[in-house]
Length: 300
Length: 273
Image 1 (tube, helix red, strand yellow):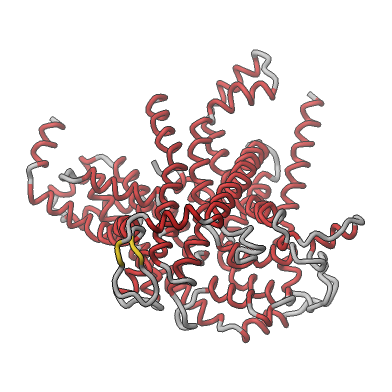
Image 2: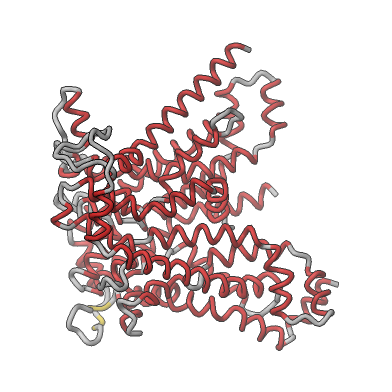
């Protein structure tokens, strides 16, 4: 019956027209601002196209060669990936930790969730403006804390060794609450019967965590990692506010470099090549998403 | 039994300590915004309470204009997304048509590759359309939202087709069916998406920064960044905190009032497949 209906509707051209008409407005914007720019970046990455040129000029892979020969490019890729790992792993770990803390039936849990989550709804621009003062040389709260304990002020944002970790601490503070809610919803999906049975069998909390909670949270881990990496790669507001890539490009990220090449140097060809590399990076970190989908089907 | 109680108490203690740690930057921000400017930064406010900083930055920066701009962008973007995604979600959930797979591929593309990274090609498109430094230019890339379509389609699919077929037989048009049958069932999905969309566009920075170059079109975030990076803000933490306070206040209040709704929305938006 259902199949017959399907067949009928498949060849019902009026219905199809309706469907496409309904689809059209949303599709129009998605085609122009998501699909087209992807292909356009791929094409422009193969061209020389700078300020003052009327038309892009095809130059093959030269933009990529330029990039791959430039040590700065490797530095930026390293920054991007190192910062990604520095933020994603700790924020996932703290997200899970916070989720375990608030997944209890105690008083004050509502307050705790609110306290952990509120940085998520603050704009990164505001967060970075505030943290810049926390990290400010000598006068900043962090350096004053060091001085109080008899240590030397560090001026963390001006030191190429500490600038990324300092930004990462701020980032984890902002992101942990966001990841917490996914782990929380994962934890709440674990049936109480399983937990009770294991507890009755004498499983210790740590065994319970390692043998039951962690494996059952597997799919959650996969998609949370995708979300966390994607978020991290697409957000560079703090770089604009705090350092503009300083000192000596120690805090320049890929998207910030795309922005610099495109909107400060007006080198659209190079900026497009960098965009293509960004797209590749996003595809790689999205792989877990496909795996987790397979898993879900498997569990069902 | 007692051991368990102690353990529980210990965990509560730890989580409260972390909560206090997490709140520290906000407390400092608010305390500083309402203290008199000083040469030494201090954690606890040690001057009189004052509205001077707020007053000063409100007059030094065209915040009223920025507020209107951000509000306009947030509201118009959401309204258009509301319409486009409702129609698209209905088509995908209820109707059969050739090329559906292709449409899904496009939607998936936007989920994997957020518009935030396509700044260079999208800016070119915008300047070819002559829409640089306009509010509509800031909104355009977001008017077809894969996320909204996904959220709504999920709900629409759960509504039995018999219901819409019955409405159709009673002579309801497709619009009436969507309006009377589908939209009321998806209220919570709409609220979820509203929360996500509003917080995203309220907080977005890089794209509005690129698109705008006049105060008539700048958003709050762009205005704050210009102020925070200006020479007169250098070392003036009281003023920067006041400016920051002005731009985060509405969203933060909304969050503190409806924190459950906010968290549920963010969860449902994350788990979109």
